[in-house]
Length: 309
Image 1 (cartoon, rainbow, N blue to C red):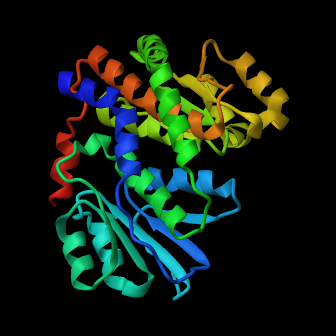
Image 2 (tube, rainbow, N blue to C red):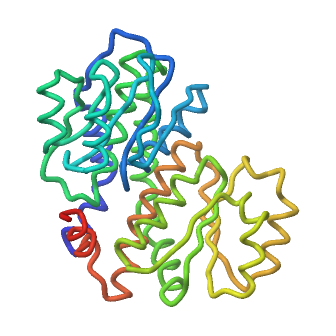
């Protein structure tokens, strides 16, 4: 667990290193961008989708399923190990001229080199639990290099600085919430922009603390899930921003129906900074909650077995 804790603390340094990795350039301009990934790679796609949407760049993200694409579609396949079955299946069905592979090795790297597909190769032998930065920031740099978006160096430096500045506070807040969640069922509700962070919180806690969780956009709460909550054992965690300001009355009504809840704020930072504050918070929360539950963070014996089937 000590090594895991060190890795958590190194998140800002990981971002810096990942952003400085070499990435390829594309000569062709594509009218459509599709990202396919599973688990944490899927969350990478969701995060890019929200951040690039701010610049009117629209990205489609799919969890391993291959949807129809044409020669004007750039398809980015993400698999850290390079051995994710769904990603390899997608690779075999696609034209190499429409592909970009992001991986550290494995069969995906071998196939990509054989077919001369564009590759973003990231470091090998990283802990699977801590590869998010190495998948996200090289892709961000790639979009810069292809001139799809403006240079994001200032934004990245600001994110790193903000994470370092808030590291101790994030951990204190995470310990406080971990104590509250020890014997609860966490429900994470967010605005649309921050849904990737809500989903990351869900998957991190399920994987590390072995607690079943749930995440959704807060607007969905008003349509159906609200009816189930009074009869359930749950603890809501809210991530709100200007995207839900028009739902103030509904949110106020929701808060009055429940005994207790927690709201993750840090609202005075930019959306991009706050997104990564939430990812950092998720790691601290998973670490301390797994310790309280007597679980070993980063150990996934059942997932490891099923991947071999």
